[in-house]
Amino acid sequence: MARHELLEAILRAQFELEFAEPEDLPACRDQLNALLDQALQGKRLTRRELLSAMRGRYKEFKRAQLLAEARRRGI
Image 1 (cartoon, helix red, strand yellow):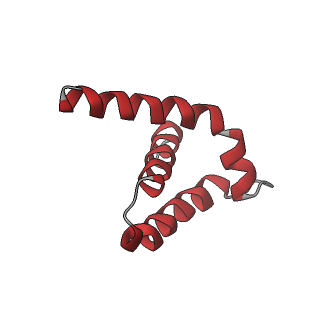
Image 2: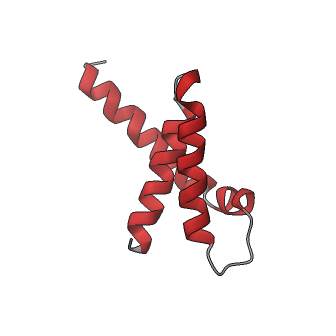
Image 3: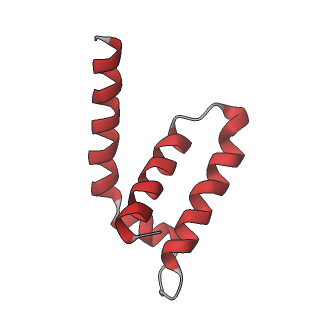
């Protein structure tokens, strides 16, 4: 998986975890952790540190996703 594709997958997985139904939380968390682990191979960072570094990108991603959903619904 190319770097930008991995970043996009992490952002999407984080978004899905944030908005998941309670019964889907474990699977969403596992998916996010697997992607984070893939991104961290060979690096000296923790999952938390990577997520913290990506916080700004995630906020932009989340805003874009919510706006797109609002447009689809005609809000």
